[in-house]
Length: 256
Ligand code: BTN
Image (tube, rainbow, N blue to C red; front, side, top):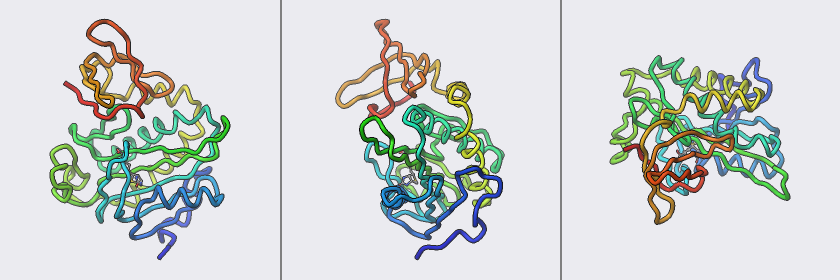
């Protein structure tokens, strides 16, 4: 069953993102539905929301658990190719800012895209795109937020993940959170890329930290020195070399 989210015929004041919102109580994955719509030529800025996902997709082909009480959305966009790296940055900034505003708690961003509360993951971001011959056909931003359910629902993951209701001790008004998030993202989408990059890089807790990352079988220890405008991490290895690490290649990333 497809329904327009009753309280959100459209976000008033939105330039693009949130002018059309489609809601399903349950989907396999909002990414899969948004992808089908993008292929069929849906309007740019369309937001696909599911109250629950049965096959939520995380980064690196991982599963994203999204039980009832989670907020799961994908947004179809058609930016210029050079804007692509900034989508992840804008999504992380909009997600953390809207959580801060609605839940009134401190939120941190861990490279490349984890949104944390008290060092536990509360939201994740996934950007996928279809590119042909140097031309971007569409990009989809996927955002999953653990809103109103107990973190124990996530099983073993609850050691590293939390939910907003657990953190605040009460239910969070999900429609207000959604509205703030979409308005913030809509604004950032039209902001200069340099501004997005500067804000994102300043808000990363990762920089200056000692980290260990894994790419396939190899392990690298060093200090996370900076991020570049592609969103890659600049890692100063213990032997002095500088490793430029694109987010998409890292299989495991921990602070040590
Ligand atoms: C991550 O691994 O941190 C990224 C998780 C992204 C999850 C969101 S939930 C909405 C959208 N639909 C999906 O299947 N995945 C993304």
